[in-house]
Every structure is written in structure tokens, then in C-alpha cells.
Length: 235
Image 1 (cartoon, rainbow, N blue to C red):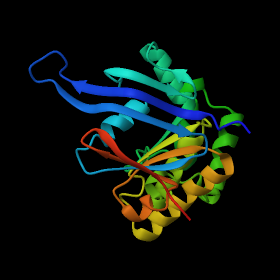
Image 2 (image 1 turned 60 degrees about the vertical axis):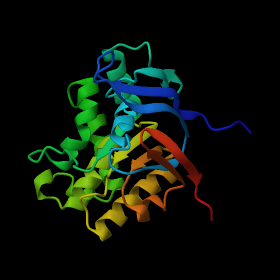
Image 3 (image 1 turned 135 degrees about the horizontal axis):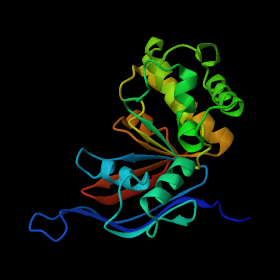
């Protein structure tokens, strides 16, 4: 049986700021990492370990100083900004600690935003896709409510639906439950796991919560810009 394809490949990734100056600081030191289709992994480590820098590189929001980075088999080193934006929009979904919804927009309109950015004017297909996703995350009856009228947990569910609307191979979740109470956090985490299991979408979740990290299939620990542990959950 063929091995699952890698949705993320990093080889020899370095990231420095202030390159060539006396103030140059190297933040990431030769990161080697791959994530297979359907994996659900946690990225953990203390503050200042380089997690945000690494997530920005994986999300194609920044470029490495050196090394190989590929998304779904597409190498990124030779791509210009427009091509990177296109690849990011089609292959990567984002869920942030602060959901970044537009408060005056309805849940449906917020979910449609990535499609509007890619295709322009809204159409029936876009609305149906967004509506189906909101039903999937348990908000079918709230889709026409402004985001400002939703609870924190509901807003994060809208953010997850928005992250999935372009059918990405990889979802990057940066402290997705950090602003939620325990019950809401458990619900959001369970939703991401369900999507992962049913659709085969890969997730890389940055979290400081050891309870949630322990429920991921894999834990990748970053310390001082280096991966110091990469373990699979047993049992």
C-alpha cells in the first residue's frame, strides 16, 4: 500500500532576522519536519521558542532564509508573492486564537470571504458551500446572524468553517481554544478532530494547553528554534 502523501515538507529550514548586519539573529535552526495527509499534530514549546515564526513560514506568510519548504508537493522557493498567495489560498486554512471575523457580517458572509477573495462576486454555489459548512459545524440555524451576536465558541466554529471553505489540505490552528472556557474549548477541539477524521484534512495545532496537546495524534516540541521531540500518541 502506498504511503500517504505529505501535505507539508520542511528540510533544513533556517530563519534569520537582520541578515548580514551585526544584529542578525537566527530564530530557526535547520528545521526538518513533514506532515502526512490526515495527520493531527500539536506544535508545542515555551514562549519564544520560535513557534509563531515557524507557523508563519508554513502558512506562507513569511519566507525562510534557507531550506526547502513544500505544500502538497509544491516547492515554494521559486514562487513570487502572487503565486504564494494563490497557493496559500487554495491549500492552507487558518484558525486563530482571535477568530478575526467581521462583526457586522453574518456568519454566512464571514465563511464566504475566502471564496470572494479568490473568485470575486458571490454566487449560489458559494452560498451553498458556506451554508453546508455552517450546518456541519452546528450553526445552520445561526448562519444569518451577525458575528457580533454569536458566543465565543460559536464564533470560533464560524472561523473553522471559513478555514475549510476552500477545501484546504492543511489547516493551521494557532491557539484555537485560547480564549474559550473549558466546555467551549472541548467542543471546538472535538469539531476539528471530527473534520480531520471524516475528511482527511491535516491539522497542525499550536497550543500551550497540555490537555489538548495530549489528545493530538502527534506532538512536535520546539525549543530555542529546534525540534527537540516528535512523538506519536500511543493507545
